[in-house]
Image 1 (cartoon, rainbow, N blue to C red):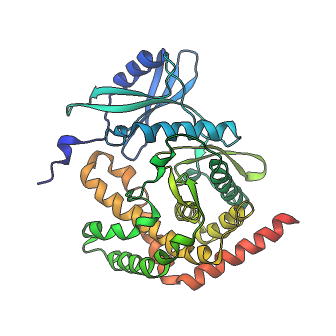
Image 2: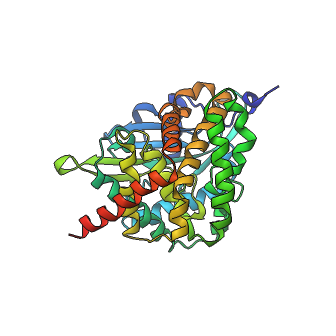
Image 3: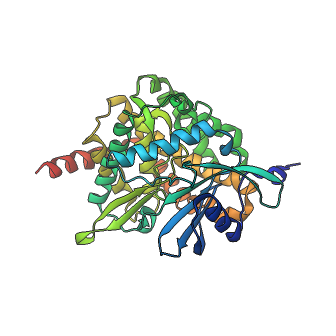
Length: 361
């Protein structure tokens, strides 16, 4: 029997509890409050009496156990902001702390949750914005800039970013095999199995040679906020959610961005080349890294579909958000698989080289 509901790590505070926390920890009196979407954490948009806006983020109780990791994530956000990267950052409590561990009872026993009050940055998610190829180029460039900047991060606790057992890491695609039963009866299950096998034979042996460093780990279409500028273009106003910050391969970062930014784009095949060109204006990939890109993109789509389906069983009340990539992701994975590696890469690499030449003019 599955008893996960008895020890549900997902916080489910009432708006009143959240407002009381903001007052107790930050001395902020909240006049308006509303829920924001989250995977297994809890986010509230708050407005104080002076009309200042904030985001109160309550981490799930499982991730809250690793205080050192949360401290490094919080520090990385501030570090990026100081270096000109538009990252969301945490505000200090009345006692000067950037995060607070709070014992809270959400109706299923008292648990400890990490609480942070974050800066609110206006704009819309990339998922909800009609971004241009130029915008995508700039997102790719910013993604590489994030990772290049993180190379300078210094902290005594950086070893916590060696998250070898993190199942969302693209180095752990084979772990999907343990969860494939959630796709029983689905035609896509065979495609996912084939992606895993090809990953094991074509990507895994090369990973040791890939360029590595600290990566954001989840540059998805919900974690990039953009604002409109002139001529229908957008600029990135914020990068959110550093909960998957880890040591990883730089090509993973780009593959994750390509996978998610294709989801809502009316011309998904146009995404990869523009992002790649933007990235490589900062950091070049090796032939082996480029050759692995297609399977890494497919691998992330597989992870999103399988883990989303798995987590719905545990967090049924958050079904809509957990399956946010399901419909488009299913169609996209099928289409990319049908087109095949050679065809998709030809499109991406041709677009990237054309784009790079055009940008230099």
